[in-house]
Amino acid sequence: MKPLPDVATGGHAWDWRRTREQLFERCLSLNERLHSSSHDETTWSEYIRTLDVLLRVEEQVARHKTTEPVVYTTAQMAQRLGVTVRTLLAWKRAGVVRPSIAKGKRLRWQLSDALR
Image (cartoon, rainbow, N blue to C red; front, side):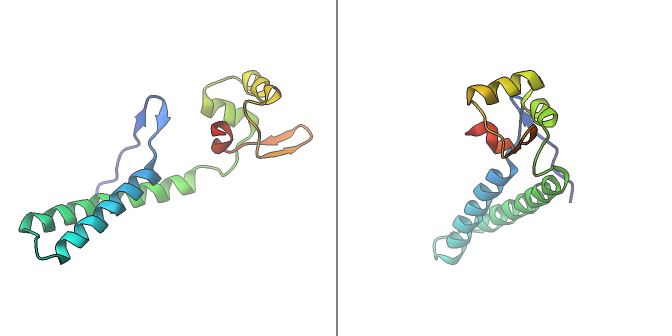
């Protein structure tokens, strides 16, 4: 099975977990249709194609889990957001973002910190 490419849209990483949820919901829907009396033969091929893509997305999610750190240093977080360290710290002072861990000058960030 060929791996899915890393996809970027508008400067943001593709949300593989959301894609996985959508594909899983689609599989459930197709499964219900398969067990009803009103399905046709194309439902099977659609179900198999959806399962194939779902498995490929599962691989992608697993790969991202192992390669991305849970927390970032201030420099790493600034780079992920495409700003300078100075800008990130200014945002922190202004209350725009808040680090997950703050012990003195030691700050650690998660990507979700930028979405609050």
